[in-house]
Image (cartoon, rainbow over all chains, first blue to last red):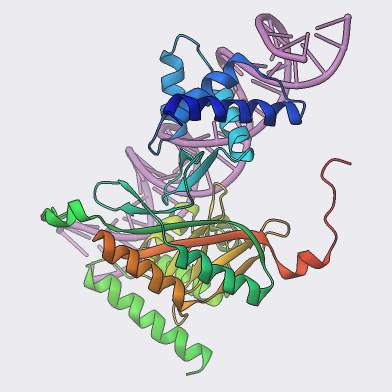
Length: 156
Length: 156
DNA sequence: ATTACTGCAAAGCATTTGCAAATGC
DNA sequence: GCATTTGCAAATGCTTTGCAGTAAT
């Protein structure tokens, strides 16, 4: 499947989700959906808000937040918290489950996949009779790139 | 070691931490520190603020937040985010490393320990040359207690 | 004496919400 | 035509901060 075919398939799924709940298909929702799916990085809601403000098909702040929440409910996006006040979003359509490392120096998100983590968690859940449906894991540290650079002293 | 001996040892460590940085030992810091160490649950900053407001040794909101940040830096408390806007705090002195499950129904935090998780993360870090120093893992789902209760319908 | 800390209230910031007007069904 | 959505701006809720006064070294 080409990139645009994937996008189209995702869009159809989103429409089906909306219809299944009796929610409406609107221009604003289509616009936000398309912009989110087009991104392949981690972004913050206000970045998307700014994008939408510049866009021909303007969508307001409130609606961007509302649509993002809708997409999260529908399973098209995930949110990651890096310990700060704001969320980071990423779309997950066509992506396998993964977790993140966040670099304390450059702030970059590094994705990684490791099935052993999920398996270990499942074992703990079984032992505690906890029915898990989601996890959020963030590993903090210094990324490979920044380790090569000498650390700047914070207090000279 | 008895409970009070542990507390005393922790307090000495905190004093040492402050002195090592040339920070001052104050009544407010001692008060916040003692209250945090006395708790054995997960609490929010504003709960501590409220406690301090009622206390004989009053400490203001700003100072509570500032001291909590100090204690986190010193490694006496950890913060956990449950996906909401506010942090949850817990002291970690004398506790082994653990992660959390959060129940979507009752909001309870369940602690669990599983060495395999850390080992798996370490392997991924080595592979990516990421130098990790901390992780934050939260598993969402329904706890054992709530699973026994029938779910209330949200839309009747 | 100096310098750091505290209290207070005001500011910040990401996110949410109330309401009238616009839009999809 | 009628209910849902939208845009807007104001509100929210937690957290941080500036500043003048207070306390630790």
